Length: 341
Length: 295
Image (cartoon, rainbow over all chains, first blue to last red; front, side, top):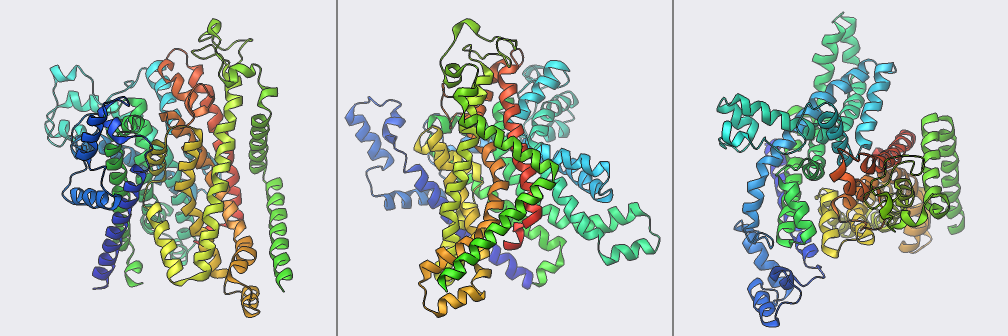
């Protein structure tokens, strides 16, 4: 019952926050000093009657409160307006590109967890030794390195010098003829796996490595640091000393007993970094020419395609709120103490 | 009474400052970081005197030396328009380093009093301020900054405003936490008892005492804000050409990264060093104060 109440309260808060978020998004796009109608026509020297027609069509002549009501009405029906640049529905543009970004995001976060958690465990277990120092250096370099710079370094090192991974893109363009990918889920790694298209699978994987790692660098630093702190706290507790006193192997103590309890705070950090990594994908996508949301958003930002900008801001904030909600619920599941509060 | 409590806050802040300086002097990494940061600030301030080619640093082109590789003439090479990379890095320290410091200060100036007000007053004032804060924190900060920067127009000043708008809520949260615990203390209750006005209590008694945790958080944040500022410039929403900026320089050299690698590489090193220095210093400061206790 308490769990149900907790979930209900969290979901209601999330809805309230999202309504506020839509208000802020709307406010941002309506302080645009440029003439939206002129932007829509693609020229500041358009004829006055054309401008007037567009203003009427977009409802720009109405009071702001009415405009917001219309915007919200459309929003609830899933209509985010049309992109000024492509003239296609923004929702369509976003959903078309979402899988590419999510694939990159998941791959990057998977890498970050796979590297960050063991690094944290390692440095906690060997606290004060050179291993700890090295992990500290790795994590501080990870959080200090701009993604838009690391990506370029990766390209120089692994494409130009070593020729191990492709320079950019999501898939080799020749594959379209030799081993076409059947877009079942539009997550190419999954699609090629499901259809046993191993040539394409290998190519897709190769294309993911550099952008994925570039995206993972920052989360690796945060996860390693957080997991180290959590591990140290747990390792100092009585039940761990008891377990050691019973002569249980150190490896079992570390991985079976300590890590299990250190994972809850680490989970929070992983959740929060997913949200951070979402903006990280923008830079990574620009550098690696990755056909996802980030590339589209950056283009929209520069062209002042404000329906697209609003759509993306809303999507980003919703994603953030959703991730926080999931992290809270996951924590409740992992750590029963939260349920009792 | 008023006078004594005021000096109480001041002397405590002075003591804290001395403590911080002592810790930094004893920790070699923090000391080196501080020196590096101060050095970069000095370079930024005295850029016209330090840069080998001041005009090129500010943007004037030099068609004769297009893409000149690193040499004695241009230690770090020249860019597509023949401009000395070193001079541009030196001038670029202004938007990339000094402006983020201003951004964080402004965010503190807006955020901290609001937080102190919310924490001290409680009730509906607290409720309204903190719910608004929550809304701003619901956005990924950089995404919000990008949207604002694009809407109000591109440029260094616009990017700075956008970052202030997306950063102030963090300081509101910290200041509120500190204010909630401060308002229970005797010197505040004493001030209330003798009828000191709320605005005076907030600005003279509460706010000065919330400053240490906030300034620590601000130092820790500076690395992130520098990265954000560089990121905005990189995608074209910050500093506009021909002005120098590290993020912009990385973006300008991106097309030539495989052949004229020096154009993007060196400005990137500059960002990395500065952010690293702030993060190392922030780590040390965080260990002293641990602002988490106020959250």
